[in-house]
Image: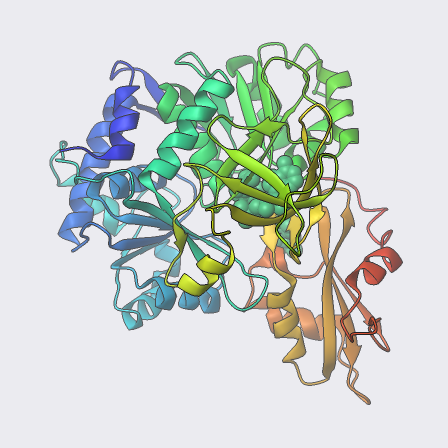
Length: 508
Ligand code: MCA
Ligand code: AMP
């Protein structure tokens, strides 16, 4: 039997006694234990009725067991569906109905509320807590420590990750075993990961960055990770002497730069700092170089495509650019209207093709079709250019998207909630430069005549409906929204008008 992705991990597995992860509470899990425990979790999944191709939806805190559950899903041939711990019950309800998972795994503290939602979507519920305990672990404990991995080929699905849509609801990006295996393999080589590497893993594990880029790379290199529950800048610096690499979103680097302990000496054992998920300001890149002597390596990816480009390991890591297409990835810049190739140096739509690019959106064939060209290139929605030296620059977004602290926020989703409130005539949600989060979610609201709806009313109304990181950091009331001659709201005018509202906010 072959299991495309897990076999790729097995092929690079070091001696069973080598450590895979160390947790911030002092636990250590070896590769041998990972094999045995993921086998037990895989048996528990099968015992819960999970069969190949079934979705397993998971909303749990970051623990080694959560990681083992991901690996167990891969081994059992299930489709892993991780969900941000910030998602509210109405958000979960949508994902369950859309994905129709066989099984939902959630925090025991939330089980009372989650279980009925799961049941109404036809799913069983098991629990996994922040201490690694729960009904899933209890069931796994009684299981054998070896497991015959389900046969899975390159094209079988390994995961579905939801990404919000510019219109309508979130779309589930279907990722195959080969999408994940090929990208991890390329990154290991490109970033020179080897068995002696120790990665500081302080990202959440429900998105591509922490789950695939960080974890799959470590597994594929047979390396080790220091598995941190949360990002704590002082603690991360204290780990530098034991580590070799860090992967983070720009907010990590901004906050680390606020720490006095960040010095050349402190970072002398580290060999690599990677940034992605949102634009890293050249200012941050330069400040980091000055303080530590290291040039941050910036790369560019998407949930749908894994990683597309990276600055070089050797050679110039150019600030403000995302480097070159990774081996095996074709990237072109096209005219957003006609789809024709742009001249070198011209800004246009970034399109990509390669083994990293997803299979399509779950049960949305029309949406999938609309986002691919006939020759198989995926239209990313990001605008960019390729400079004379071949470096790719992201020049903006063709999609109405805000990236706050590395999390994507789609304005439409928030506007719909605000517009539905009595007392609101209309709203426009924009991203405004924010020193800590990169962009701050900001709502510009027009009240209905006679309405006195306040910021607190709006905050209260969306509190239980949208994940916290999507909530506007500021609400601004105006008499009317600026519109162009076509009647379209001019968000660029709003962004310009309110560009300085977070200027005095301190990072961290
Ligand atoms: C937390 N809060 C936020 C964010 N995070 N608000 C806006 N944007 C955020 N990103 C809010 C909380 O709700 C809370 O609000 C307050 O800020 C402090 O919360 P806390 O939990 O203490 O925040 P934190 O731990 O300091 O979190 C900040 C963070 C975190 C460490 C930057 O957001 C984070 O880990 N971001 C990484 C996201 C990520 O992994 N993205 C990769 C996506 P209140 O005080 O009002 O309660 S994958 C991707 O994008 C692609 C594929 C790629 O290329 O990688
Ligand atoms: P997600 O949908 O969470 O996968 O986020 C993907 C989006 O994040 C991309 O389409 C880009 O807009 C953005 N992104 C990721 N990495 C970078 C980067 N290094 N610079 C600028 N934007 C980035």
